[in-house]
Amino acid sequence: MNAKDLLPYGLGNPDLVEIQKGYFVDAEIVDDLNKLTEDCRKAGFELRIESAYRPFEKQLSIWNRKARGELPLLDGQGVPMPLPTDEEELMYAILTWSALPGASRHHLGTDIDVVDGSSCPPGYEVQLTPAECTGMFAKFHEYLTGRFSGNAAFGFDRVFVPGRGKIRPEGWHIAHLPTSRRRLENFSIDALRSIYENTDIACKNVLLARLDSLAEDYIYPYFV
Image 1 (cartoon, rainbow, N blue to C red):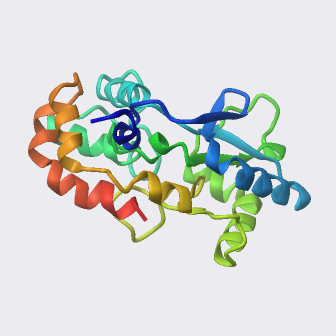
Image 2 (cartoon, helix red, strand yellow):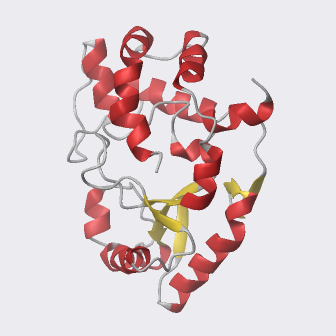
């Protein structure tokens, strides 16, 4: 595959811009993201990015560290859970909150995790949990919901919503859909399988054995 074909998998050389300190996005979404940020500011919110572009190696590191118990493994309610000893059970536990390396929407440069910086208490470390969405950031997310439902968010919308696939809803994750759709046009599950075959990834055997069904539940429902 050439460099362009590798982009949907978090590989290759994307055209990135540092939009907030330490956070990079696809150059094509910068204008619309600035518009959304200004829109939120006028409404009294500080749109602050907590995660943006993430290369394959970063997603792989998250996946493998969760599999080793070096990062917290959370259940469907966002509560820490014991590390399963069965490889398939472990894989599905990780998938509750983490995308498959090579199939994360954060690879696209079009997706960001956002909070209202003005609502964060001093020294608070954001966790990106449902409790935050319905707690300290509730008004911010209610505002975003209104903008999304009115098609007034400059191309941005939520992707991980109730009733879509098997990944838990993530109110904090928003995507610039017009751009992400173009980035995903050449995504291939066979290419992802080839990447896994040549990668040191936890749960590798069961991932390869279940990849087609995993795609139906954890990948394609979110390629909207």
